[in-house]
Amino acid sequence: MRLHDHGKAWVHGFDWNECQNSLKSTVMQLGDAREGLARQAKLIADCYSSLESIFDRLCHESCINCDDICCARATVWYDIRDLVYLLLATGELPQHQIYRKKDGCCCHLATTGCRLLRCNRPFICTWYVCSRQKMKQALIPDINWKAVAERIAMIKEMRKQLVIQYDTAVATTTHKEDI
Ligand code: SF4
Ligand code: SF4
Image (cartoon, rainbow, N blue to C red; front, side):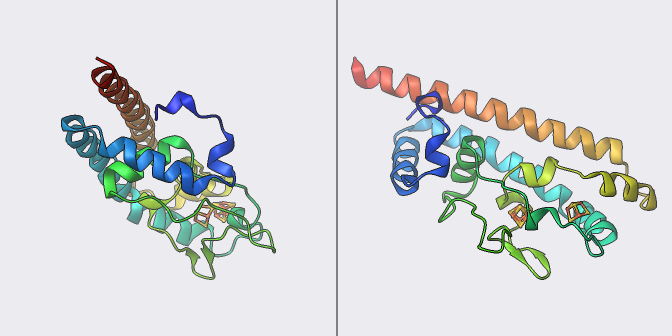
């Protein structure tokens, strides 16, 4: 399954299980290329983890008293880059797509915040820094926020490269099977 073979619908739709199975079986068939891709995905996971305590502090300053909690109203979802990264980094995929509960809150929102480790959230949950958080960054001067922004940009580029290389590996595997 190459990534451009799929429109947006499947990440939202009723065929979540089918697409999970398809993605998993494709990755299994990648042979030697799988290891290299998995190493890259784990580097991305390490980058996410390096941001965990930083964003915990920022959330402590900004989210606890927020009167318009974004996770209670935003619609987010795992996109294909999230899924390829997660599958290669962990060998697993989320059991279900993110959804909003009846009250509008994200299914992973708990009273203490997000239940998921940062490296298991959709990337948007990391790169999105709201205006309140941007203001609060000034209250934590010991963190180099420019470097944090650069780290996020680096993750974005690494994710992009990962799916490009995943697609190349799938195309190569498919080509070999056709010969
Ligand atoms: S990220 Fe911003 S909008 Fe979302 S809960 Fe925190 S302070 Fe509120
Ligand atoms: S996955 Fe977590 S961080 Fe992302 S919207 Fe849901 S509760 Fe918020």
